[in-house]
Structure formats: structure tokens, C-alpha cells
Length: 337
Image (cartoon, rainbow, N blue to C red):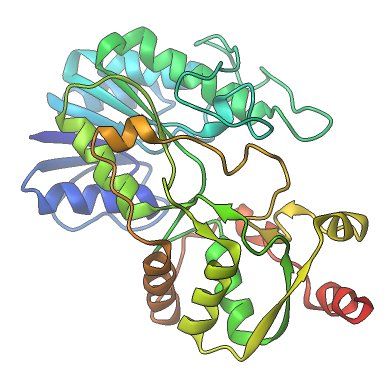
């Protein structure tokens, strides 16, 4: 099996490259060579995927049985279309890492793989779409929906579209789980969003990587929601963070209405917290039927802490600074309860 990974040096792309090598596959990675280090054992090709000449040069390195694209999150659909078109003669299948944000109803409504998608042309530029007044839909969601259309237009029934929600695990670059781990380690009263029994559905990066590789080698097509089918309660999640870090703390569960009234930003200041009804109601049964297996999220917490407390060095990313409530703001809120 010959695989091309678009990206391949950090987080999901790195886990995919390492997992493919462990299966005995021949792996080529394509990236700019600016973020992270190439995985030992791959054939690394450096270039800019928005550059036509670089894409043509890459295509000459083929053919590949499949492409797994992990590096299109910041690209407009027209650039995804250009890459897919340039590589189509050299690749049999295309596994595209997308997002649940492509759905019209996210995050307000429960979702399945057949829920309506946002509309975006496959050749749209970065200006297409908008972000709603309440934060949904998002321009990002429109752009990713257009990227899906671009891949499907070129690869047809050989296109696989994976739609994760939140991906956590060793190597995380966004900072959601590392922030909670550091907060648990600090101890004391911890501002926590009620209800404590709310189930959340993040998925481990290693499980997404394994499923992507399975689909690269398979024959299925179309979209798959890649979310944890069982999930974990917020209480169990924070208990796992405290247990792994040894933090002497206890959550103070606060009603969401109070958090909102006090100006706590959902999704970022308290990572993974969002009040919308559909945000953690994404059905992944089609993916499960096709072999998606998700480890207990307590294991994800454990392994992420071991990585983070060891030599955890995520790639610098602007989203890292968005996550986590300032200690002074948290202390003021806790004192007012």
C-alpha cells in the first residue's frame, strides 16, 4: 500500500504517517517543511500545496493507492479543488479530513451523516460564507463544505469525508485538554460548567488516525461523523484530569446561565463547554459500523498528560492562546458564588 499524506508532521497527520508505517505501508508526506519534523521512515516532499508547479512536481512522485489530506483546514475550496485535480491521475482514493461544522444544523441540532450540509461552491475563494450573529453557522463551516464538494467533484465514489468534532490526545496543538490538565494540577476550587453529568464526545487522535487509514485501504465512500459514540461526562473528565495530575482540587459546578451572565466565553475560556443542544449530539453509528473504535476518554487524558508532562511540545499555533479562563477572572467568579 502506497500512501500520500498531505501534512504529516504534527498531531493527526503525524499519527497517520506513523500508523501507516507501522502497517508496513510506503508513505510519502507533502508539506512546506515549516511546522514540525518529518516522521522517520517517510519519503518527505516539501512544497506549497497552493502552488501549481509544486503540485505537479508532487504528482510525479506517485502513484499512490490513497491520499489522506490533513492540511486543508485553513485553505479555501478552490485550493482543495486544485490539489485534488492535480493529484487525481496519481491517486486512487482521497480521504479528506473535514469537520462537523459543515452541517447546517451544527451546533444547534442533533446530527447524523445524512443531515443537510451548508452550501458552498467547490471553487469558492476565502471570502465565501459568513458567520452568524450567534456564532453559527461559521464561515469556516462554509469553507470546509466547499472543500468537501471539491474533493467529491474530482474523486466521486473514491472520496471519503471524515467529519470529527473535537480531536484530543498526545500532540494536541489547540490546547483544550492541556489547559484542563494544567488547571487540575494547580488544584483548589475549579470553575466547572454544570450539569456535571453532561456527556461530551471528543475523540482520540489515534482513533481518528486508525479509522482514516482503514478508509484509505477500504472501498467505502461518502461522509462519516467521527465522534466518540459513548463519550464521557464532564464530571468524569475532570476527575480523570485531577487523578492523572495529582491535583488537590474540586470542581465548583456553576449553572450555565450564571457563566454566560458573567461573560465566560463558551468553547474557549472553559474549553469543551458549549450550551447548544447539538454540539455533543453527533451520531457516529455509520463510522462505528465501518470499524471506528474509540478508546475510553480517560485513557486519552492519561496519555496526553504523560506526553505533556514529559517532553510535550506542540507546534506553535495561534488557537492555543484562545483557550482557558484567566486565573484572576476565575478567582473573582468563584469568590462571588
